[in-house]
Image (tube, helix red, strand yellow):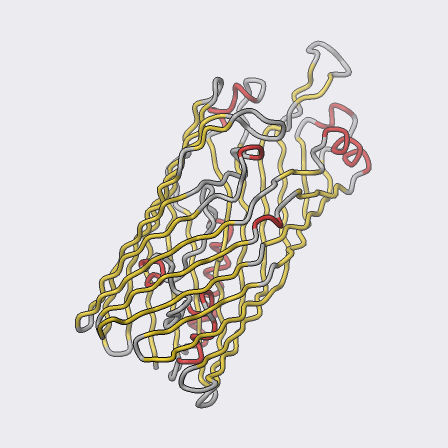
Length: 420
């Protein structure tokens, strides 16, 4: 099978998995088994096929054709409790990944193409657990919000010490929610209130952005890198429905659209080789989550517009805050075997005043481990990430869901790559 066909099939596979890649409260920001196993501290190293995500300047150092595929399985375990509800997430598997192909076109220029899933947020709960909050009726409570990026890239070797790279990010987003729609005064009592039933919305859309990076290697044992990823506004459109709205004389469905900003990301990292077989890395990674402030929804049906404006449901306050991740990694190599470990701190961007079960967010302490095996031009890597979520006790505030939240996530993953 030709290598181009392999990449195309991998891209189709990733796109088909995209809607499943959204774990409970997890922002996917470790791509590639080697990088993940080193705590995601990879901006100053960026020397394998995942470089297009961490620092595209690293691509300029590839001297041969290079293909890599990374697959991962997110396994979350979370709870939510309040005086009425005692809910647990079901054990489920959320698949994600990355596929990339690189081609040197001259001694100093390398081009590439990749598809990957950089981020996702969402939840999936047993509706029976939430029946006391939904007029003692079981409805679906779930959300899936995520992104798939297709990224052509170009990298240039300026000289033996300086490397530059850039990628164009074509972002395809999905936004799906199912929850209880609430109640309304019943025009034909009894009862006094009408259960509006199930609320559902399904949306998708496109946005674009770019990633640029620089890598400076002043000595064989040391390198430093910096990466900047622009914000990307994804323009969603789709359909929403409320199952029992027809009893009030309104249309039960409407078209809608919504703009969501995937925020700016900037990082700096260093890599140090105190010995030929030993590598240490450290990164600082900043995300401008404050751009996710108030998310507005535009409902196309005139009656929906009036209804949502009166209820305040045409605007979703988020008030997220900027975060800074601190990451560390290490790798020890002996012959064709590598052993890796890492740690990072991942603070939550979401304040208590907007925390809810459909768009949850947690702070994590994260430990990582992995190993790799090289056989000539073939590389196999395995990684394991364990995210220990910080428990959240959320007091009541307008616009949130008060209660106690917990979350832990296990992330096994595997990569295979080949140079030819």
